[in-house]
Image (cartoon, rainbow, N blue to C red):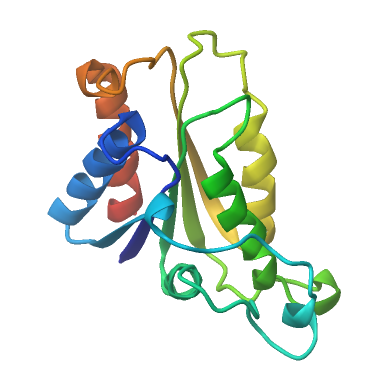
Length: 187
């Protein structure tokens, strides 16, 4: 099983990284091949609306440091998107990646270029402690990724994580991350 974990946080050692590390370690211990990529370390642009991926090409026309990441996503079994919630939304780094997945859709939106049956995990830490705040983020993106053929979709929300080390102290949250990793790898 191939898993790609994308960290959309600008921080390399914050709550998002902590939760992705726990997911990755658990999955690797169970035999999965796991690759982690920190999006903020890459140089890339968002979708340019050139529509070449719907005509002359079967993939995104842009050639930058996100190109191999999109290739990894196409061949992976599991995509893990980790992003803190900033101003009610995933980070700009993650949103630019998500916009580039537009290239996964066939012309005339007639289906996905990805194999059906993949799994999606979204890890979304946020400072707000109320679960009603920003509860709309996951359903929106889960809908897009369902369109791509991600049949199994999981949400892990970390609430009230203000300090960059808060997630490492939340035993319940860490166990939830491990449980999701175990379920995916053992299914």
